[in-house]
Structure formats: structure tokens, C-alpha cells
Figure 1 (tube, rainbow, N blue to C red):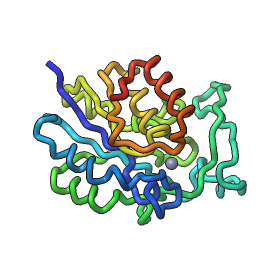
Figure 2: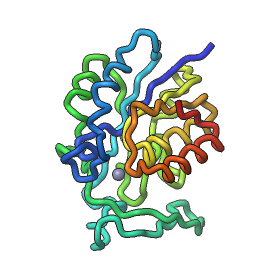
Figure 3: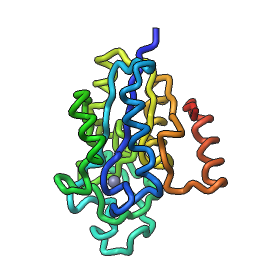
Figure 4: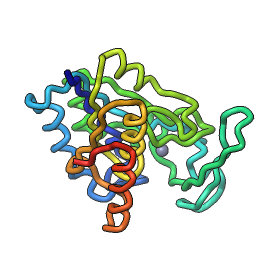
Length: 214
Ligand SMILES: [Zn+2]
């Protein structure tokens, strides 16, 4: 028997038009996502809303390094005795804890209260970048998401939200790696890079890692 969870990723003011790291057309998914949350045919056993939830000096902010926004950066592993590195991008300051930009979009926040959905925060340790709602980029610090899904015997995970090519993608890749049947519902996402070439590469990566884009 399949038991499904819906994960709504980072529909926060800073990722919406007018926000500091806006995903183009991100606002278009708000009402459809609310309908999806309420859809009786979907039989969601649990709905989880995630938030990027940074300290003001977060390592992913260009300001922290006194560099221009969108500069490249090489991150060094936070795992003791691990010399691994990962290439990343320095972002404009976004989703700082307790600020307006970090709040869920009003309509999504209202829905969260109405349905009593669980909120899972990520990004709150200042020394490491996070994309997945399951863990930091080193898969070292884990959020409570996996335990929460496990404790509710979830088998199938559906991921929607912002941005398709960053936090939605990485949350879905993490879920598939942890053994959930994993789907991204494309119409309920928007990407930062939505040109045909980027989308093609994304589709390939998801397919190779057992995530179904439907
Ligand atoms: Zn962030």
C-alpha cells in the first residue's frame, strides 16, 4: 500500500516576485498548490511545508564574503577530516530568520494554519549551504524531515514549490536516495533557469536518479 506525502518547498516571500531572490513567475503556483493541498482525490497522508531559514551571516550570502551577488564559490566540507569541496553560487541575502522575506507567502501560511501542516526549516546552520530539505549539501546535518516521513510510514513523496532547479530538485533527489518513490509535479513548480537546454539537463539528471517528473 502506498502512503503519500506532499512536500511544498520554500514558497517564501524572498523567492516570489518582489523578493530578493525571486523565481520568475513563482507567484503563479500559489493558488494551484493550495488547490493541490486540498484535493480530496490525492489522499495526502501528510503535507510538509519547507522554509529556507538562514542566519544573517549565512555562508551562502555574497555579502558574508564581501563579493558581488551570484559570484562562484568553492565550499569546503564541514565533515571532520574530509577534504571534499563543492562548487556553489553566492546568493543575495535571502530568507533571514524572522524577516518578512523568510515568511511563507500569506495564502500558503493561511493554508498551513488551516490544515495544520508540519513546517520543516533548513539552512539554519550558518557554516554550510543547503538545497535539500533533508540535509545540508554534505549530507552531514540532517533536518527532521526524514524521521517525520518515516514515523508516518510514508512510501511516496511528491515535491512541488520553488525553485524547480535548486531546492525542489535536491529535495527530490534526497528522497529518492532514501528509498521513497519520488515524483515532482512539474506544473506546481517554477525554475530559475527555464530555458530548453537547462530543462533538458534537469530531466536527464532526475531520470538517472529515479525521480519522476510528471
Ligand atoms: Zn538559501
